[in-house]
Image 1 (tube, rainbow, N blue to C red):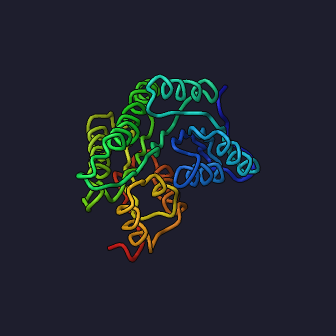
Image 2: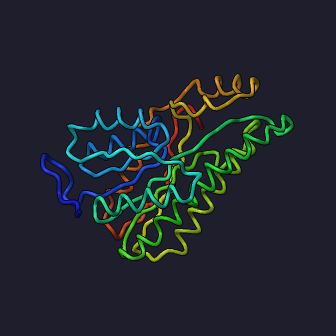
Image 3: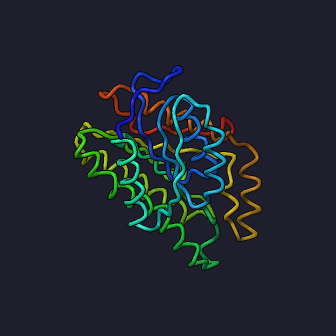
Length: 252
């Protein structure tokens, strides 16, 4: 089917937006914010119960929110996610690659399984999204990639070497995509600072967890990042917002 303009105060140009890692935190805030602004959102994540609750909250929105189970580490799963959204709505206008994990630890702890997990989700998951959406955007002659990176893409702190490496990679991949793509395909990197979310819950190392509790003494809400995503998507087609860094005023 082809998506039409929603009734009830939606934008003049509602978009079909795919959001990964949408079951909590930034991803959930982005999905809910965009549906509230009248866009048609396909929210992907592994925790389908969370997605259904998100869809229920967005039921009265001017736009729509469709939940879809998604594992970004599975290339075929990501391809099917994009294909299903295109078949459902007739097109895909934007992909917000948000899925990420952050099990911080010092390198000498040798938590190699956690290193692998960060690489699989934060880097390969992003690349799987690019591989699935880029042919669609190219065929349409338009599209928008939005990558949720981190201030960790611009600095390295103790316990975060591997995490920061994955976010540097996410920044580099997205910047390379921007340079290589046809100008009709827009590319944006959003780099949040400390955000109130479940991301730190993946930390198993006691020392890193203790350090993170202090680091997170000042944080911003996930909707602040959702607002940055909404701003980038709302710009006219001749405006490409390359990168936004958004963080607490106390995080200098």
